[in-house]
Image (tube, rainbow, N blue to C red; front, side, top):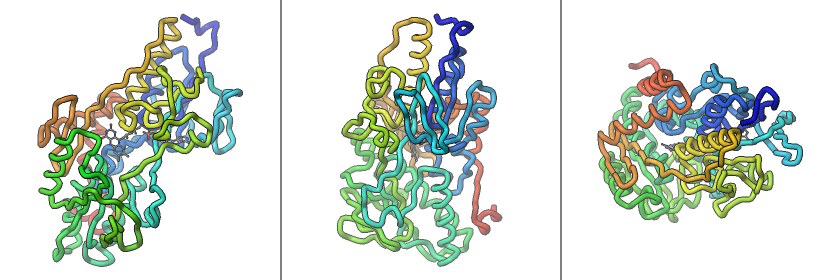
Amino acid sequence: MTDTKTHPKQKVVIVGGGFGGVRAAIEMGRLDFLDVTLISDSDMFTYYPTLYLTATGGSDAQSSILLAHIFADDPVRVIIGKAVSVDRAAKTLRLKDGTNVPYDKLVMSLGVVTNYFGIPGLQENSYGIKSIEEAERLKRHLHAQLIAEHEPDLNYVIVGGGPTGIELAGELATYVRDIMKKHQVHHRAVHIDLVEMMPHLMPRLPRPVGRTIERRLRKLGVKLYLNSKVEGASGDALTVSGKPIRSHTIVWTAGVANNPFFSENGFNLSNRKKVVVDEFLRADGSKDIFVIGDNAETPYSGMAQTALHDAEFIAQNFRFEHENRPKLAYRSKEPVYVTPVGRRWASVLWGDLHLHGRAGWLLRNAADVKAFSEVLSAKDAVVQWSTGEERQELCPICGTVS
Ligand SMILES: Cc1cc2nc3c(=O)[nH]c(=O)nc-3n(C[C@H](O)[C@H](O)[C@H](O)COP(=O)(O)OP(=O)(O)OC[C@H]3O[C@@H](n4cnc5c(N)ncnc54)[C@H](O)[C@@H]3O)c2cc1C
């Protein structure tokens, strides 16, 4: 073991205040031989799994936590800034404001960005649900439309048959009906459409999962467009497999791309454009640059559970290295897939076990508490989870009606 009295602490710089970065900072903050700095371009940790609820009348507090709150009692330095480049020889990370941050070890967990695949008109004419700002923009639009036109949109169109699109589609019909009532709009049915390019929803999971979710969505009145390709969007329609669906409310959840930081900084990328990592999650054959979570080419990359697992894995290896113990090689961990669809119903795939309905919903709540406890104390995690009951309407009409 290295003596921290004679050896200065190793400088670990972690970039990204999301699932991977925050978890890594918490774990490494506990290791007294490390000097830990967390750099993020946002002062908030975003809890993506509840953003669809924030967009449909829930509070933004349930989907975001201040980094300053998470690290209030931790010896972790938090810097709000955007990383733009890395100088591997000088071992410094450069921020957008020109600051150079020196590191001994660099851990990158920058998450993904939305990809519109160059589809004409899509970026300008669609809503997203990947940040608090996007969720609130969608919520504001739903109300503004009812106030301006005094009727719902002809169609509310969600693109993407993965968990994000499914969760939103399941909740949106109920929410739009609720706000129509508050705005005293009674004369029109609400049409929710879910568009997916593949023949099934949840195309990456075993077929029974998608089939059960398809049945549930149809029961909630959601119209499914399967095998349907988005070709373009305009101010009042989405073109799907050659035909227009009339709508002023198109929500794009179907595409993400790796954070551009890695291509801009010459990292070795896989076919999926994720960073190629070795058995210790190091990038580029480097001994001191680690890439985790959504950015790394690992079997279950793209899930919060994987980002948390990766963070714990490297923190453990840093400790083993300090104790002169052999480091472990990375082993991926299969996530539990929990997908809520409408109120008090969720599909759960846990290894070979597939269950759905109210039991799935209870598991989903347990999963949320567990996930919050990965970044907060047990007490704060329960408080954070309970904010899910709060409603937050930005609309003057709905905001004053209980
Ligand atoms: C709507 C939605 C719902 C989801 N639901 C689930 C779910 O139910 N279960 C599940 O397991 N997974 C879910 N996921 C996936 C999960 O959220 C991600 O896999 C997880 O967030 C990945 O963690 P990460 O640390 O790699 O990236 P993130 O959590 O995205 O964190 C990246 C951080 O880096 C910061 N950042 C980006 N660029 C820079 C830069 N240049 N400089 C400094 N900081 C930067 C960002 O602001 C952010 O704070 C969902 C994702 C979405 C979008």
